[in-house]
Length: 118
Image (cartoon, rainbow, N blue to C red; front, top):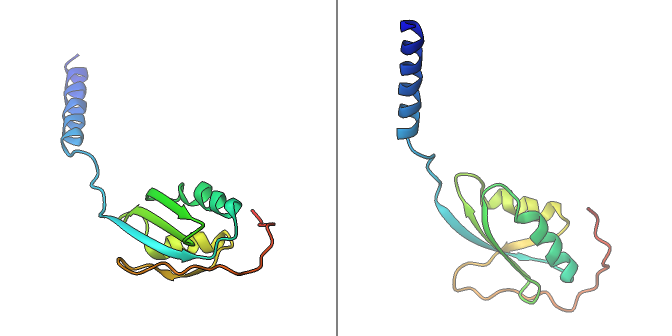
C-alpha cells in the first residue's frame, strides 16, 4: 500500500512540474509578401488550399490582380525560403519579395494555359 501511494505521489509531482513549465514558446510572427506569377482564379484557389496548411502559416492573402501572395507565419516553424519553395512546387514562379512601401509588380499581358498539375 505504501509503495502504491509513493508511486501516485511521484506521478503527481512529475505531472505538476510538467504543467508548471507552461506551453511551448512560439516564435516571432513575421510577414512576407511574394510577387507570384498567377494565371487565374484557379491558381489563386490552388495556392490558398495548399499554402494555408504549410507548417507555421498563420495567415494568407492571395491577390490575382496584384500578383502577390502575402503570408503571416511563425518564424520558429518555417522560413521565407521554405514558403517560397512551397509556392514554386505548386508550379508558380516567385519573382521576388514585395518590401514594405514598395509597389507590387503586375504581370499582365501574358499567355498561359489553365491546366495545372497537382
